[in-house]
Structure formats: C-alpha cells, structure tokens
Image (cartoon, rainbow, N blue to C red; front, side, top):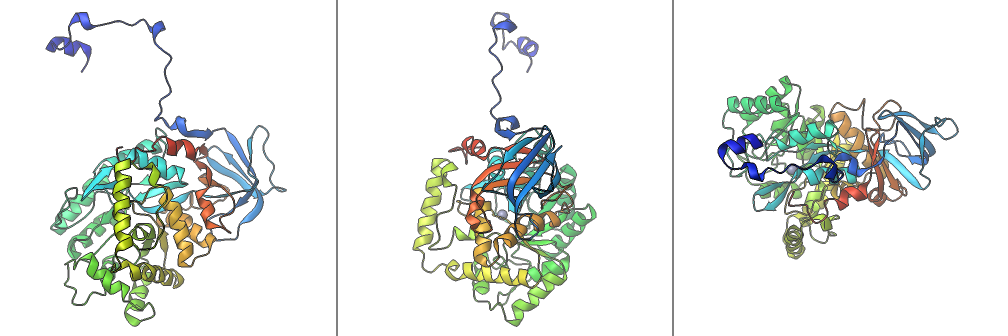
Length: 478
Ligand SMILES: [Zn+2]
C-alpha cells in the first residue's frame, strides 16, 4: 500500500512520515541474492588455456587445449598451437584442470522431502546448488507447487538469478491419489485440460505419475505432443510396455519403477511400488521377458533416466551421500535417522535390487537405448542437488560405463533429448559456453568431478564456493 493510501485508511498519520535527505542514506549494499554476487569471471572475451578437454561426445580427452569464450559462446576450441588467444582476452591458466560441458540433468526437483508427504519448495537454494555442482541445465521431473518452477526458469533465463537453465515440468499428471500436493485427473478430458493449462502457463514438459490410467495418460501425451512438449513418467498403474505403446517419450528411474513383471498385474492399477520392485529384483536380464521389453523401448525410441542416487540412499552398506552439511540441521538429522534404519534393514529389497537395477540399465544402454542421467532429490532425503549430480556420474561409472561415457550420458544425451544439442551438451565452436572446470582428471578418477573450481553458464563464470556458502545450513528453509 502506498503512503497516501495508508493515510486515507488512518493506518499512518502525517506525524509518522519522516523525510530522509538522500545524502544521508547509506550506500546501497550489494544484493546478496543477485546473480552478480556469485560471479567470478565475466568479460567480453575469456580464454581457458592449457586445459584438458572432455568434450561430452564420449571421445577421449584432449590435452593442452585452448577454449575461447566470446559473447556467451565458444568462439574456438583446439590445440594450444593452433588457437590464437585474442588480444585483450582475460586468460585463465588451467594447467592440471579439465574442462567438460555443463551437466544436463534430467530428473531434478526444486523441492525436497521435508516431512511425510510434505515437499518443501526450495527453488532458490536448489538452483544455486545445481549450478555450484556443475549442472547448467535441468529438467524438473515433476512439480508439486504449480508456478515456482516456471517462474524460476524465467528469472534465471532473464539473468536475474544464478542457476541452471530449467525445462520446467507441469504439476504431476496423476490419477486418483492421496498426495496433498498433487492434483487428480480422472478422465482423458481432464488430462488434456491439465496439460493444456500448464503448458499455456509456461511449463515446457510433462511428468506423469504412479496412479494415472492408460486412457488419461494417452490423452495427456497427445495434448503435450500437439503443443511441442515431451512426456516422461514415473509409472506404476501403467507398465513400461503399455506406456511405450501410448507414445511416452521417457521413463524415469531406470527399471526400478517397472511393474511389467508383476504377476497378475491388473490394468490401470498400481500394485504398489514394492510389488514391482520385488519382481524386478528377481529378473534375469538375459531372459525373454526383459529382452522383449528392452526391444520395445528401443524400437519406440523411449529414453530411460537413471536415478541411482536416490536408490543408493535406501540401500545398505553404501556410503553416506555428499553435501549433507548444507541441509538445515533438522533435515540433516532426519536423513541420518533414515540412513541408519536402511543400514539395519537386512530384508530390504534394495540389497539385491540396487545391483540388479544397475545391470538392467547397462543392458538397455548396451543394446542401443538412450540413457539419461538424473538424481531425484526425494525419497527419505539425502539427495542434495549438485552434490548428488556428481555422485550420479560416479555411480554410472560403477554401473560399468567409462568416465567419458558417463559424462556423455549426463551432458550430450540430455541435450539431445531436450532438442537443444545444437547449443548445449558438448564442447564445440559455436555452442553456448556452458562449461565446468574441475581440478584433476575425471577420465582417470571420476571423483574429480566433485572438485569444481568454476562453472560457466552462457560464458559467465560462477564461483561454486560462494554459491554453496550462501545456502549452507539453510537448505530446507528456502
Ligand atoms: Zn522425482
């Protein structure tokens, strides 16, 4: 309300109006939330010299390279001997470092499990953590708030906030369910209207969920496709094979969410995630039923997103996940209690499922399927944006990919899926300068992806330390 309005309503009297002479005002303090607060390098021309380049295509790393960044793009990349560093460039000597493309991560969220069935909207802190971890593009894999993902996508794109580029999903497309933060669609027409409304609001992709019916999913997919958006799903009521036949573009969680192998599976009914997982854990990856599903998914061009990070937190005898110290203390404690319970649970399906899930994903990729990488910061917590994205790369290597293959899955594969590979996803002249500088050599030690020194997005270099410090102990509150 303006002062005049307050005066009219009697809430403010003339005596309380104090006029401060402008000269006595303190100098404007820099806004600690502005994008500029996290910038380390910003210049018309920047040259990254003496660096190892891992280009994201799966090709071997190249030593002693130069990358010239101009106007937000990669102007040139090549051998030190063949590239002339332009006069006036800010030159950064990166001896002992590696440069790889910014990560393109496909099952991210801007919310976190803050209580049973309660998803706290942490868009501001999460977008900083993603960027700090070397993630320059995310797709949110489902939205429990409505407009926040879309607003953040716009404000980051406008350069107002530090964060990754966001492919913002609409709120979940789901059938009858008991989630407090989830809408229900019962009919194909409701599914069409849900998708049309949210894509109209600015969402750029759609995530279907566990209780959707086949006919509502089909209507949602058709509406999304008509409007140029893709659909992914964490399914249960609909099997992977059925969803592939309905035209879905992507399935989440590798094969961990498949209900195709549940005995007596009723159409359109979720038998419970646990039922599905018991059946998947018992699968033979060389057997006919799995091979038939593999063939169908590959034939229909359905991509699969690996989210090993969230399942690792539920599996016994695995290390504590990285990044817990940025969480608000109560959330850190809550996760550690869940972690301890998982350590004691000898009967957990994950003791066989985790390794089986890896073997199935690997078989899918080996047979020619498109594997994408994501993290899924949900479950019982502990999947911390940025840190978990780096962990996901380590887990893909554990799954059997070489480090350059794992990096390619987490960069170029995602960019291709998003239809943005002409601009992002690999290091090549003409592409957008989305680059991660890490100390060491991830092609020898994948864990070096955790040693991020600078993250460039659209040619601006961000300081990961400053980004992390700005949210430390606060993640869970905002
Ligand atoms: Zn998710």
